[in-house]
Amino acid sequence: KELDKSIQGGELFFTLVLNPNPCDDKRHRDIWSKEKTCDRLPKFLVVGPQKTGTTALYLFLIMHPSIISNSPSPKTFEEVQFFNRNNYHRGIDWYMDFFPTPSNVTTDFLFEKSANYFHSEEAPKRAASLIPKAKIITILIDPSDRAYSWYQHQRSHEDPAALKFSFYQVITAGPRAPSELRALQKRCLAPGWYATHIERWLTYFPPYQLLIIDGQQLRTDPSTVMDEVQKFLGVSPHYNYSEALTFDSHKGFWCQLLEEGKTKCLGKSKGRKYPPMDSECRAFLSSYYRDHNVELSKLLHKLGQPLPSWLRQELQKET
Ligand code: A3P
Image 1 (tube, rainbow, N blue to C red):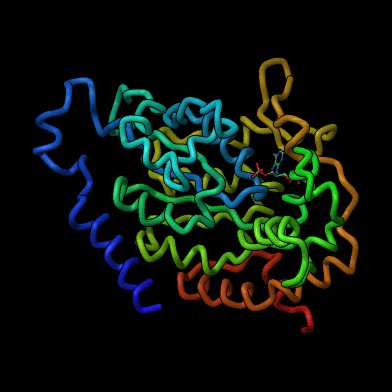
Image 2 (image 1 turned 90 degrees about the horizontal axis):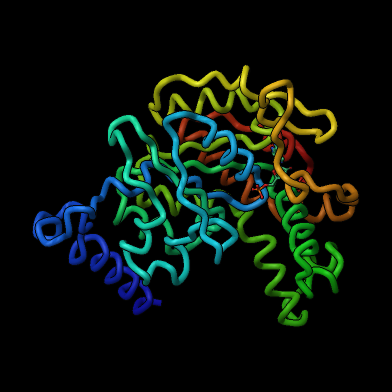
């Protein structure tokens, strides 16, 4: 354990001290080509977690005239996924190539959304070392609903384990369950340990650089959320989302309003149709996430942030 700690400490020392941000180092910049510029790095990241409404937020963000996303990566379902996993080893040039050179560095806001960053062990440390001033946006919904939506997502992508096992089997699998089931369970449940993951981001980023969005409010009242996002980012001009978004009753969600009353909604894979979670699974997950939710409420309290309504409801439930 001690060795582990000192290796982790060593890695942090290497990342932040011995290997400082090349964008801050004149010696690096002096030998770069003229075209290479650290302005081609994001000013903010939407870090997830998956299934909380990250694509809706992405669609709304790119409607803003000063907000520009990365170009899509064909390998990772459009997301760049640089700071988690192995793309990181492809280096800074690989990453910067996803971004345009901003025409106005002060007013243009480059960003990327990679929903797996949220629960990644490495992403916060790596992001803080390259883009320490970046703002971080995360969205939270009831972790039980997130887990269920994720399971449905895996089934539609024909994940063999998700097709083979019921949701109840996935969430209740014990230590002796088959390894494919255990692996699926971990991927399904672990992103919902919200407080643990947010604490990790807060080890590397100060609280004022972090925005926590209530995903339920993003779903029901996106223009209020987008006002909050614009204020948090300090982006201008102010974009009036209450005029630019409309509720599409066919889709059952808020969508972009186009000319002649047409709408642009997210595709079928966002806002999927599936049966509601049964009460047994709901009760199991409520109890599974209870301690995590208590920790989240303490953390939000410490940060001076209001509790989302789903969290208040969960905390009121009897154990
Ligand atoms: P479901 O498909 O389970 O309903 P993500 O983009 O992070 O994968 O999240 C997908 C979820 O976003 C959807 O989950 C849906 O509930 C939610 N969502 C919120 N606002 C939405 C919107 N305006 N259009 C479509 N889906 C939206």
